[in-house]
Length: 150
Image 1 (cartoon, rainbow, N blue to C red):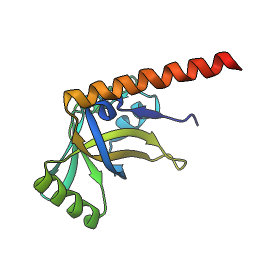
Image 2: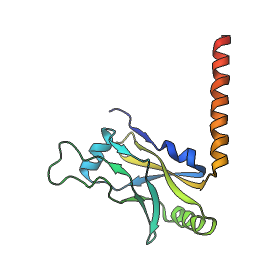
Image 3: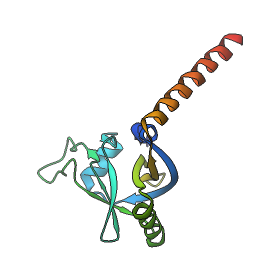
């Protein structure tokens, strides 16, 4: 079985990640088949807590190409499975400190289950984003110089 790693590249650019957790995700049959084919997108996705349950909204999973009329809705809200203690802790942090929960990566485990890595995040200001880009460019330049010397 091939490895599936779908990453949210915008998350680390727009947010400073303070804490990470791995959560299970409730899916239908056609959704898991599309994810195994790598047909999912986390770029516009975010997590929200409703009635003491964590949901991911805005995650796009393309319809399964061999599905019938029973195929899933691409942008449906999907429930995430977390420990109640962890969920209460993160709920308190998001309400008091203005933090948010963002999906970082979607992957398939060795047993074939879909899991999602979520992060407790704080939004970056524009100047922080510029600093991150400058650091990335300087790191790339250093790597180039080191590669030339050897």
